[in-house]
Image 1 (cartoon, one colour):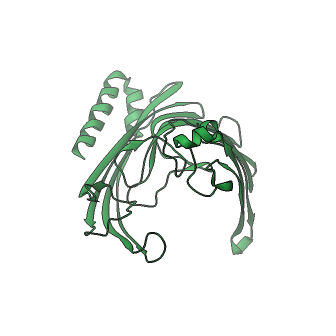
Image 2 (image 1 turned 60 degrees about the horizontal axis):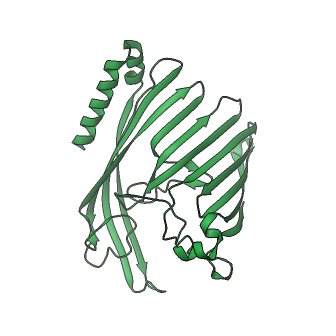
Image 3 (image 1 turned 90 degrees about the horizontal axis):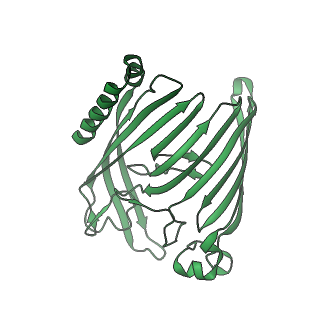
Length: 290
């Protein structure tokens, strides 16, 4: 954690020297940092099926230091965000680390502690913001999983624009990810795929038709695995003193891309490990929910 703090001091100090006093004030005075702590206990008892008999039982403590700068003054403003995370194993006895998705392995056992971090360079022009580096998307076509001690994260670039009233445009590309129970980054793959793809492209729009109705469309492409189209509708019906009723309709159409489209490509490992038609591993499905 000391290394993270020192790096932040160097980065903010170096930028402060190069900028005008006003720009430095915006960059620093609008900055904020917070330290959050979370305690997580996980118990998964496999009494039936292929995994029986086994049990995953672990307990950990996390410290997450999150720093967000302001933007420099001017037509285009620049900033820098940084995050440092530390996970500490409190309990994971022999035989209870099998199948863990929370704590990294150390010679087949739970490691005593692990750390990771990241930085995000950002730029702002009017109501558009470009971010590059550490990212945690929360989009219909991709959600950073936060269901364990430390969250999943991604590396890449994303631009968000709100320059048009009632319309939010989002686009980006991701190249790597770090899983919930890992301190190492890896490439991207569909579930069950053994070959990594380092290119996940996406773009989408959220349009606020009225204050109570929003429609959405997103496109995503994991190179050599799949293409996906998403359409969504969210409506909130006010019920006066009784609150409100929210309707959330979603539809996904996902088809194979690149090597996943051919038998030879799937034989290389570009396949889906879950259910597919005739068990071929080729991605082709329609999903809807309400």
